Image (tube, rainbow, N blue to C red; front, side):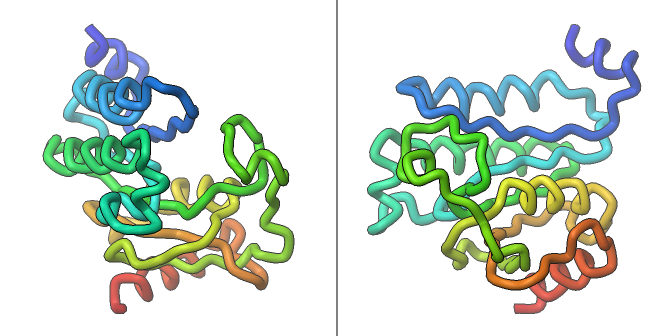
Length: 183
């Protein structure tokens, strides 16, 4: 039923990002992604999944603290499901999100963290990056990943660092994604 609805609407790309601090994380990060992806038609050209840095290290300090309620474990399970779904994908793993909306119950919300002068973007692979990422930068990275063919089937970590960012300049984003792949 869902597949037919998507096809009739002409949907060919999809984003999945849901972060809500609740005791039902398994429902959101695992069941939610699994149901969302299972309902997609195989004609979808690309799914961009927003996950989190640290998902491959959820049993290691300091990541195990973030994973007390299983959030990183369930995000990793969701990533694996997407990777094995047969649907073309790109996974973006941001650092701790800044720049509101402040909807979770963490330190970021308490201090109303902002990126400030950190508009430059650092992109890596292999779950090695740490730091924070502006929601604005993460959103732009997702949009750019859709149009940059070389990002298909890849997983990237992203954080915001001091300096001017690429904005919506696709050539700069291509360079950033390519540099991550060469490291």
